[in-house]
Image (cartoon, rainbow, N blue to C red; front, side, top):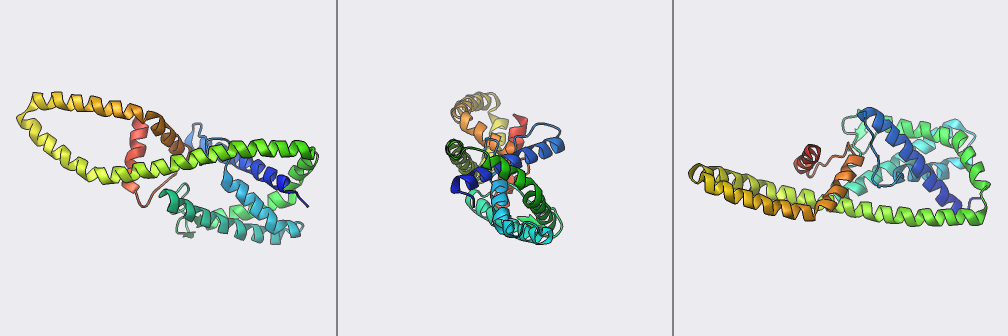
Length: 255
């Protein structure tokens, strides 16, 4: 008997809880702080969406742990698969990849992840959500709507900016791939020319580098945003632009 605002609040709450879990887990693995996630703020939509899907399919039989496990596992795994496919189609980058895991399907899902979703479903539906439900029901309905409205505005802006950054990254990777071969040819010509016109070529190259640096400074803010997106997703991969993404990430590390 939840209202629309209640469902939205649950979604945002579990987005935040998922961010806390992922950030702590990845930070421990990397031995440094990692603000995990596609968005810049402390929200991971895949966890919020997964929690809502799990609750929709498991609340009708919330006292049966076996049914909750399998219903939650199947529904969340389907969500994770199609979300991964859609994001890679849009952005040409995988923000999670299970290709190195056994029994995976196209790298989007794997048995380990599915079992984790099943376990998460049992903990969430039988235990955790009861506490969240009680807490939410104690909040005044008008106040809850205000909270949900403010969160919706904030998250919508954050999501729009993050999507723009992801599209910009896609354009950068495409440009890197298109220019890499041309750059190799230019480098060879430069090496040959340097052998004959050493000092003159050096002066011209330094002037050219100054111009390039000036151009880079113009796009520095956008670069920093794209770089921050990749730092939030250190396991990001791209089958379509593997070499270009590797070059970009290496350059970011050198910076």
